[in-house]
Image (cartoon, rainbow, N blue to C red):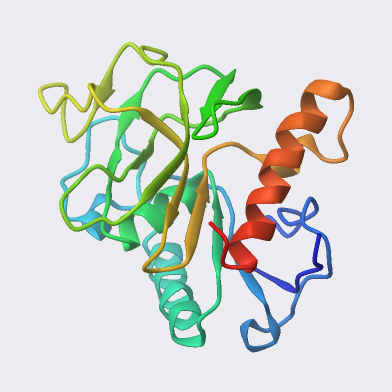
Length: 212
């Protein structure tokens, strides 16, 4: 794996521990930008009203990370988003979010190459790139029916019927969203974690080498 200089956007400074290479202190010195997990993003970022279950937004963080996203675009840097970061990249790449679902903390994912892995999970929202104008490549998803409900702005705004996106690539913005938390599985312990971590680390390598 080629070593990267990762600029971390977000409070979790250990979020890039699973990516080979040092952290960059400035975005100008980076080869990769990583957006970390955290609270729900404000639905206004993707043109929606909040679901009653959506957390109160941290608007300063949303605006700061949007600015960092735009700067990474200007610099032509690839981006990775973890959990909230994956949702942010979806919203800023033209998608929307499932604002509330009942999602288990550990489950299987299925990749576009028909491999199956178990991953961790800590979210009630997730990326929904299946809208007009959001160019994307779905790389992994959860098994059908994993979440019994998938609400948008309300319970009447049912977003069931599409795959539950777990890993998504947005080619126009060179952005890769990973809904799980690879940093919580590093260093790896056991064959099961090794398989999924090899998958996640391989995705980052392919992203940086423009092979996704």
